[in-house]
Length: 518
Image (cartoon, rainbow, N blue to C red; front, side):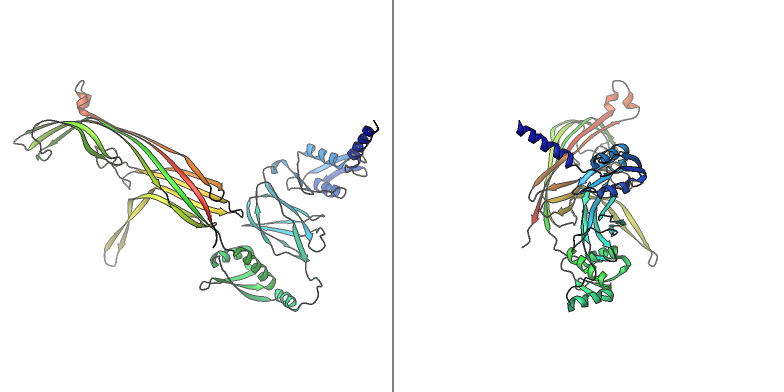
């Protein structure tokens, strides 16, 4: 029994005395909620901050002496619709409108004393610059930012930090600064003193690049430092020249060293399978009359042809049957040919390709299996010698796979894929008897496309299968002779119909293999 009472006593003790309490009465009148968070942080092991959506909230209220800080915060959450997020020793309070926004939080510390620093300006730069200041306990918060890669640094009269690249992801991101005080009284060091002196003067620095192209580095430096640095390039030896204040030049030099790393390579292999199923049918009567006697080399009579070989554009060689009624008169110069066509064929076609391409990390590549056709022409006139030059304009259709790889530290590969499977739809018929003939140019025609865009993650040497790109073509053509085809009973002799049904399925099997450096 005594043992149970002792356990109960321990439980009550930790429940009541381990909870943080506010040591006096708390009377709030027209107090900004962010000031309340800063005040409560003095009596708590947590640093409390609010995002930009809560900074304008004004609170009123009264809490008795000894009220737990957790209870006070709970009232604020319910009353003002806040969401609390715990990140280490920091409590972040977000408003309703910021629940789906990404944010960056952290603290600023003195590197030598580990002291939290107030009033340090934090700079987050991508295309635009975002600024924030550290609070009483070194805390800072930047909200409503878009995920991506940023350059982060600080601006302070007393402290220095070289800057770094930071990847902002979904949700709450954390980054703590450990900055170093300027002009510390270290033992005398001649090279260091010379460097400190150079930082105050304008200097020129030539930096040779081993991996990156000088144009890439030039663009990054100009966007990051703007008019603080003058940048020029030397194409011959792939180097970049910096001119400006010493401290800015040294910061840029440090950044270039971090960026100028050898890029990894990845081999992307794509097995492309395009399966087509075709059904072609033609049934009807075709009439032909010729006054030159060239229509047929056969004499008058009836001809039956069964399972003879023929071709249809797009389908290749087929087998069919027909009945011909040929009559020649006027000494054989006039020929009347009546053909009854009975044709049906099916075809399965599989196009299988296995292209492979090696890409640098972060560089895009294209795999193609296409057909080009002329869709028009450019006309160029030369007035000096009165000549006209026509240049054909080509368009392509087929399978086009664009790949952009990103190789991570664990050798996993993120692939940004853009797939197009397209074909030409022909409209202006060159052969009226063939439904598959036609043109794709200024006179008519169109392009049918199936597109897929996605991002996938693969482990090194993993394989994925992409499918679901289906297409169905149901084409029917009815031909008839005006007036005669409407006559009852015999009208059928002046009609013909053709149909084509095509199903297409496209599958792509992708493999990503990181190439190890030798």
